[in-house]
Amino acid sequence: MDVLLGVGGSDDSLRALDWALRRVRSAGDSLTVAVVSNPESERSPEEMEEAVRERLDEADFEAEIRHVKGNPGSALVRLAEEEGFDELVLGGGEESPMGKIRMGNVSEYALLNSHVTVTLVR
Amino acid sequence: MSPGPTYPEEPADPFPAPPRTVEDGKDREIRFVALDEEVPERLVEMYVAFDPADRAQGVPPTGEGAIREWLSGLFAGGGYNIVAKHGERIVGHATLVPDTDEAYELAIFVVQGYQGAGIGTELIHTLLGYGQEEGVKKVWLTVERWNHAAKHLYEKVGFHESGTEAFEVEMTIRLR
Image (cartoon, rainbow over all chains, first blue to last red; front, side, top):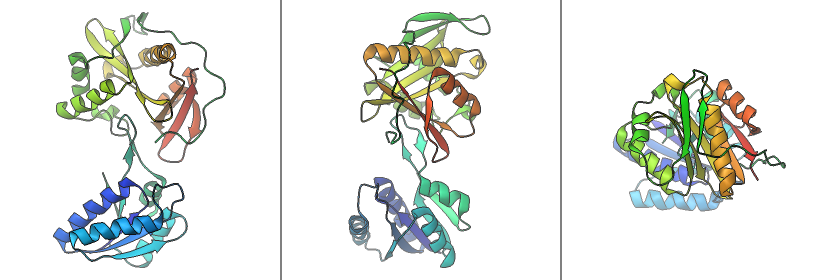
């Protein structure tokens, strides 16, 4: 299967990357990482690409890294649908100080709009 | 995870501080006390028996181990806890968990047989009174968008909606 992983600039995204890497390796799937730009996030898209590349190198796994412009949720869903990906993987929500799961806008948009199967990593 | 949105400018009126005893809507004497040192075994029991249908956004966790771990975080981190007791049994729990930016996150849980009798409202009042005593200024919470009963309760207490971007509604109150 062709798996598309969407990453923003948060630790949540890196956790999703680790999870996706384990999955695609054991299943023999291909992985494409789409870096979205979110002005509010901790890392810039360039810093994020570097962090992703580092992890891919560590895992000795080849994956295409792409940058996606515009609204992160709609851009990711469009990319997944238009290019025929089988699965869209996203960070599935951070936890509040007391441990409540809080779903971000991107995950919510993808869940409600994507015709491609969505996996949220917890 | 602190709310980006704003808090009301005016602080809320004083809330009653613990300990206090209130008769609930079913004529039961319920005692509200502050508990901040150790996790009481009775509270673990309450959450072990808690109906998963009443979970909100993944809390409380299920399974005794996860419940103990979650509770120890609520008690060790400099937060504030109020329990509602009927006799020796703990039938409700309200907590303020410190966040960054001097704000605290609030949540309440009432066991199934004691819901709908005003205990939740009294739990929040007492917790906010306790917070006021301890110098807490800002409190926020999230509630699932479709949970109208809970939203209504929080509004009645004095919370205002501050954001509705995701599946949950964010609400805030200023205590001081």
